[in-house]
Length: 145
Ligand code: HEM
Image 1 (cartoon, rainbow, N blue to C red):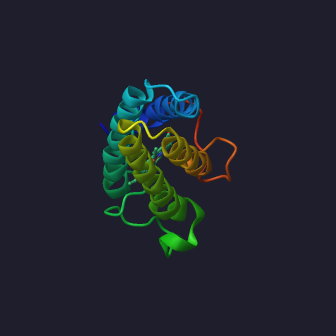
Image 2: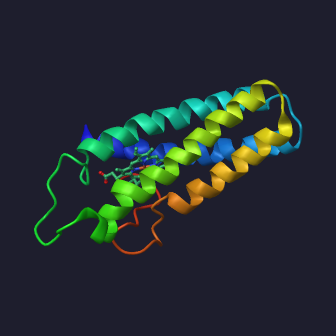
């Protein structure tokens, strides 16, 4: 189950990035279809939050698991700091922005929707453990790679 969750979490990132790009084009292009895109985006983001919370608590770097030998504090270790604090916090902000954007999109407030989605995209791009990130935090482009 653990691996399945991680794979789903990894794969959903692409769904979210795609929906964000489509949503941005629709919002700044003043297209009514932003209503449904923003809904799917919010559903995907909230699913991500649930899976993320599970991993944050019970995953490999989860809070309930003891630190390995040699690691004295999670904040002093790059990988633990990233997965226990930086990644969840930045992603939580992004998910809140996506939720706010959905509210704006429902009312067809294109400008605010566009800006909220753009800031959310930046947060996500910064916080994803891309393969080129520092050793210890970086992960594969696709699940199972
Ligand atoms: C849009 C939101 C998010 C995106 C795009 C995202 C993306 C990712 C990606 C790509 C990975 C690496 C997966 C792999 O190893 O293949 C990952 C791992 C992880 N994410 Fe997220 N994430 C998001 C939200 C969250 C949230 C809200 C939390 C916590 C509340 C979270 C907690 C974690 C944890 C703990 C791991 C490491 C899991 C492990 O190795 O056991 N993520 N995330």
